[in-house]
Image (cartoon, rainbow, N blue to C red; front, side):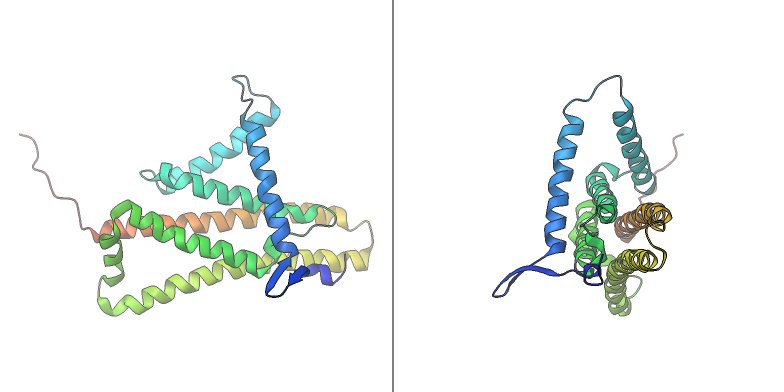
Length: 234
């Protein structure tokens, strides 16, 4: 591993068209995940084997997390959040393969993910309660707070991108420095650290995305006002 490998580098350039290793790794990763999902689901058995049990356990754990945050809207949000988690775990771990590097060490990749979360938050909020009611919560409790709401939306998305980028970049940088200093025996504990940190960062990013979506739906629902009271039965 060289110092150049720590940063995304250009593989091909034709005029304004630039192809970097981050793009190639990301698209290859998406293709492999699609093939893996197809192979894993085409032969599901009633009596699950070891691999099927592990996959079902991971999916169930993610589904439970989504249902706890959004019990009423879990079915709508579930595909996005589970796909995001799966991609992040794979993207963070792909750096363990010799010759490849995690796409999430590149700020452009984490920024794209943050933009996707930003758009999804508003999409799910509008889909849940409607455009008019969703936009109304930006003006509550006072229209004066509108600029602060907008700034908050932008800064938290920026923090989402920078947090993942910073952690994954620093993880690979630490691994590089320790290999230079300690030699070939150091990568064994660093390998375990990389796996744990990759899983933790994927979990945090996915939970923050889920929290933002839940906040958009629930805050928008509060803007509709309390449900009308019903008279108790006699």
